Amino acid sequence: MSRQALNVVLFALALGLGGYAAWQWQRNRVPPPEPSQRSDYVLREFELTALDDAGAESFTLRSPYLERDRDGKSLTIRRPRFAFPSDSGRWQVRSDKAWVSPKASEVQLLGGVNMVGPTEPSGLRTRFTSDTLSIFPNDQRATTDDRVNIDRGESTFAGTGLRVDLAAKRFQLLNDVKGHYAPRQ
Image 1 (cartoon, rainbow, N blue to C red):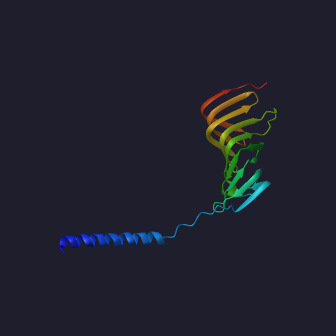
Image 2: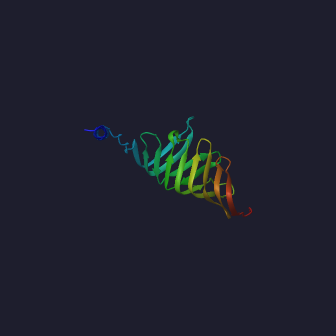
Image 3: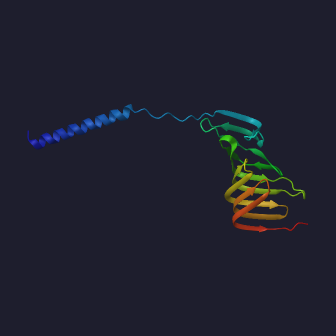
């Protein structure tokens, strides 16, 4: 046998053994465990009051369905109805879904968000509608980068991006602002 033929045979043998070793290694690998799809717990048709670190009310929530994530300790809620207390009264908020962060420092409202402010002495209420809204109960503020419509009596405003100070009942639209301001009677 020539030296060149011997090299070809040895190369083919090494290639075959390498392929066999790779196949055995792949076969013996243990797949990663499937992530748990179970919730830590589920609540149905409930009402709860979340407290802040000082023991004061952070928000009250009513919903037909809530589940808590086992790992992150966050909450996922369907058709939530929130009430956020502030110095000026209670803000009522509804949406299709919501997510509450661990320790309830942030509430993300998703889909069909409708937030109504406390009644003012004049009897007017401010209403915000958007696709998303993030509320930070401890800071008494709310934000979104989405399109927002605001109604307050006969005044209407629309814009992209919103910052709300819930305690002072002040809001700021950030971009593409259009509106009609009706003077007070």
